[in-house]
Length: 541
Image 1 (spheres, rainbow, N blue to C red):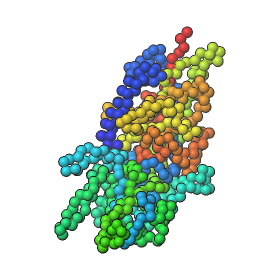
Image 2: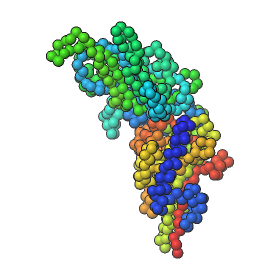
Image 3: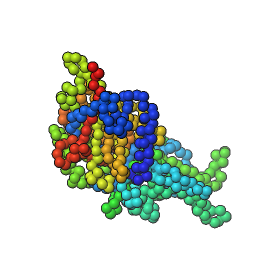
Image 4: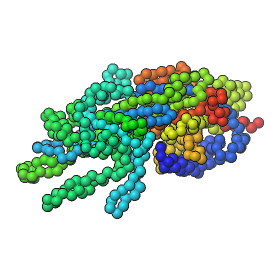
C-alpha cells in the first residue's frame, strides 16, 4: 500500500468517524464508549469495563478454492512477514458478437487490455491524462516476466460428482494447466516491456496507428485508455485460430469456449524483487483489428477492403493459481498452534494463507454477565470489542491490510453486529459497516497500530438469548461487503468445529498481518495482548 493510499485511508476513516458521531450521537447503543470520545473515562454515565476471556490461535488454510473469484492477483509478491507468492491466472474468453460474417479476413493487429484500478489525476490541453494506480503490492517499479499462452484445459462449470454440483478448482492446480498449455507465446512482441520485462505502469495507454495520407505514413493517436495491461498479441496465431477455425466453431459461445479454451497468464520472477497487481479480469478484452472484403447495399463486392474489429471478452470460468514459498518464521507460527493457551502471535494472511480462531467467554464471564438466577438482575452490555494489536517489528516492510473480518466459523457467516450495521461510506465502499469496524488504526508514524471489531450484539445474544457461543474466525478482507466463502481443499478442525472454507474476501487478498496473540508471557506485552473488552452498566437499585 502506498503512502498516498495510507493518507487517503486515514482521511476516509476520519470522515467515517465524524459521520458516525453526527448520525448516532443520540443513539446510546452506538456511542464510542471505549474511545477517546469519553477521554478514557470508563465510568462515564456509570459505565464500567470488564475484560473477558479470549483465547486465539492460527492455522494454515492449505490450498483454497480460487475459481471464479470477483478479483484476482497476478505477479510476484515478496512479503517480508510471510514469504513469496507468485500468482498466475487462467481464463476462458468469449465472443462479444457470435457467428460473425467473414469473407476473406486478414488481421492487422491484436491487442489485449486489462485495466488496473486507477484514479485520473489530470488531463492536459492535448488530451493526455495522468493517473495513479492502486492495488499494487510489493515494489511497484519491479519487473516480472509475463508469458501468455493458449489454455488447453477445459474449465468446467459443473461437477456431477460433488455435493453441490459446482466445479471447484484450487490454488495449487497449476500443474494441470501447465500440462495443457499451448506452445506458442502469444505476447511475442519485440518490445520486452510486454513480456520478458513487464511492469505495472501508471502511464496512459495511447494507441497510435500509421495512417497513410497521400503516401505519407504518420503515427496518429486513435485511442486513449486508462492504465492497464496492454499487450500486442501474436496475430498469426489469431488469424489461424479465429479465421481458420473449423466451420461452426464461432456459431455460439458454448461451442467457442470448447474450441478456444482461453488464455493462461504465466508469471516468473526477475531477480529477487517483484510486484503483484489485483485485477478485475472480467473487464479485460482482446481486440482483433482486421480488414475484410467490402460489399455495397446490394450485397455486391466493391473491390475494396473495410476495417473491422472483433472483440473477445475475458469472461467465463477462471482460476487464480499460486506458487508459495513461505519463510521459516511464518511456517513455525502456523505449525505450532496452541488451542488451549493461545498463540503468542497470530498470523492472518490472505490467498492460500492462514486464519485466526478465537474462543471467547468462559464460565466465569457468563456467570458475571448473565442475569442473576435469583433476583433476575442483569448488567446492561453497552459495548463489546475484540482489539488486536499489530506486531510492528514483524510487519516491517510489509503491506498492511486495510481491514480484518470476524465471522462465525461453524455457520460460515458474519457475527450479528455485521448485519445490523448498515452504515455506508460514499467515498469508498470498503469502509462500509464502520461501526462493526475491523479497520486498521495507524500510529503517528503511519504504521499499523491495531484493529478493533465490535461484537456488542454477538455478546448480548450469548448472554441474554442463550445463543451458542461458536468459535470465531478472523481473516484478512479485501472487501467488507463480500461475505461468501471458498472451499478448502483439505478441511480441518478447530477444537470441535469443522473448518471447511475460508472467506472469499480473504482468498482474493494479497496481504496479511501479524498480530499479538492471547498467550501470557514475556513475548507478548500486556498492553498489546488480545483483549475482549466489555463495557457495561450495573442496574440502579
